[in-house]
Amino acid sequence: MDYDVIIIGAGLGGLVCGALLAQKGLRVIIFEKKAKVGGCCTSLTRRGFTFDLSVQSIGGWRKGERVWRLLDELGLRKGIEFLPLDPAREYHFPDLTIRQYADVGSHVDYLSSLFPKEREGIREIYKIYHSLSEEIDRFPHTLSWFDPSRFAQEFPSTFQYRDKTLQEVLEVLIKDQRLRVILGIRSSYALLPPSRLSMIAMASLEMSYLQGGVAVVKGKIEALPKLLDEGFQGCGGTIKTRQEVKRIMVEGGETVGVRLKEGGEITSRVVVSNADATVTFLRMIGEGCLPLGWIKRLKGMQPSFSYFITYLGVEGKLDLSCSNNEVFPRYDLEEEYRYLEEGRIPPSPPYYLLAPSLVNPSHAPTGHNTLCLSYKAPYRLLGGWDGGVRGGLAERIISQAEEIVPDLRRRIVLQVNSTPLTIERMTGNRWGAAYGWAQTPRQAGMYRLNRVSPIDRLYLAGHWTAPGGGVAAAMASGQITANLIWERLKGEG
Image (tube, rainbow, N blue to C red):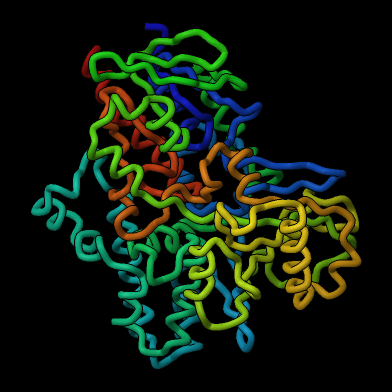
């Protein structure tokens, strides 16, 4: 065998998996078709302005939490600096601005002060979140939903809420309709309404910020994958960029290596795909090697929505109290998604307004700032994503943003527009899916694709498998997959 492990894709899951296995002394190679590592964690620089393209903030960076633990295990913790965000975000409604604080106690007290009659319900919601998050963090690597007696006993909260949506839980515990909307706001981060978002996925998202801490990487977001790459190569791992895997070779029902697009076959004891799941199975392997049930399930899974983003370099100061903002024209978290599912963007949709340079001054030249304005967007937009459509959406979102940033349009000195097609091209994620599969109850957590694939010696890492979308979850997926592979290969000698 040429290598012990081949990894396809140098996103965070692939890099973590590779670094942990190389640290154990295994011969590991990563193939990345792009020119640089990082997947969704990539940055763009234009005329002195820096923009983190997809990932703006990270949960789980505090001591003892998920990202901290992984970097510590790899001996990389001191190689990167995180800049904490507190408050984490502000949510703007027509008559009210809601702050999301960066720790559970402060946030629960804050919401309780706004809705004192709902204090017990608020506390119960976050008690459930904490219980679910704690159970998710200690899932064993091979536990299956199909062992219900064991699962219900060891993970009672996860078993209880495994098929519940966020909305179903809020309707039981919260009476005030406006508070239900406020407690459901973070579902927007997952690109789903509360009526479709898995309660388990919501707990993971919410607690990754409130318990794990939310921060940005000092400098560029791509500093994180670069650090993981350095750690991987420092342990003896090999990485090949601009090298695309065309085929995963399967013989006798098991993976034996890969064939590269430019020619050449590389053999290994194990292959890990950190690439898009549909591309992995339907293009790199092919339906003829896969069980019919697996193919049917894969084709029936729904990807997450994506984003239309306008990146702006702006002259002058930004009078904002928080760098991360989301603006809602009305108390309705459902209507927007009805448009998105029809391939449309609403006439006056909610939008994100991020000002990264307020936290990372190096993102803009002196006397300037950066803004990122974004709508949630379908991959297949009715009418297509031509230049006129992109320009029209950019004008619309800039007009909305001027309600918060006066005279914004006349101060713009740089503008770059990005669509789901851009995200697909930059990250390799089919459909421009921001979080892999949509995190509905039947696609969240352990209902996602199993990291142990139906092809022997082929494993998955990244946000198409469990735990799910987001930086901390993608990194955790790499760690869990690495542990599985190490236990197997160690046993084989």
